[in-house]
Length: 135
Length: 130
Image (cartoon, rainbow over all chains, first blue to last red; front, top):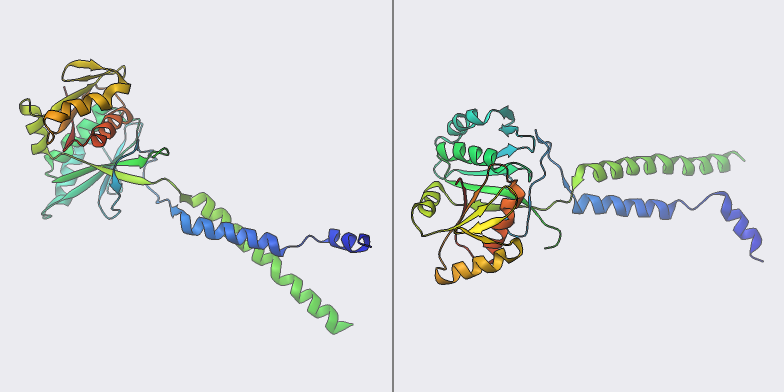
């Protein structure tokens, strides 16, 4: 009784459920994911359990694992950073800066970057971390 | 014959490009989106840092190149770091923590100390050299 009907179905698979699933996936990625911004350096921030949400509007200094430093769309030497920051931070009362450094950056380089930032007179400084999966 | 064939064909044409486009969109969003949750940790200002360094008001955690740690000169195993920090903060709840590290220590190890300090309620945290 059922044979003829089933054989007819084998010819063309139903497409509608497939489209439904793909639409669901699409909406999932649209809603849950945030688009990765194209940054100059590839950086994997260190993992931490503490911290507050990032304010994306703040200017950020990038430090990559291989020791390169970038600010405001340009690769810089660490020694150039202070002057560059000072010129941009001028005229801002309470300047707030974010440092996005890779988890593998050596402390010696990070401290040199922090020194430059402090010399430029930045009032508030925060470090970007990634929420660790366990927390 | 004719009208029937035409309407059947029209129905079929509509679907395939739609699926193509939706697939393209799906692949784009899969590749371009990231699920990493970024946070920020705020560090003490310069005045805060020099105040911590100046006298015995701050707790100094020293991270060595081999990954071992010291609190105020006393070696502390990594697992006991949080408990030791809590013990050190009990007497002086408003104290800051200064993390000094050898040159080759990666940032990830320093952040582990920051995490521990945050967890036990340290007021201010900053990085410094020995």
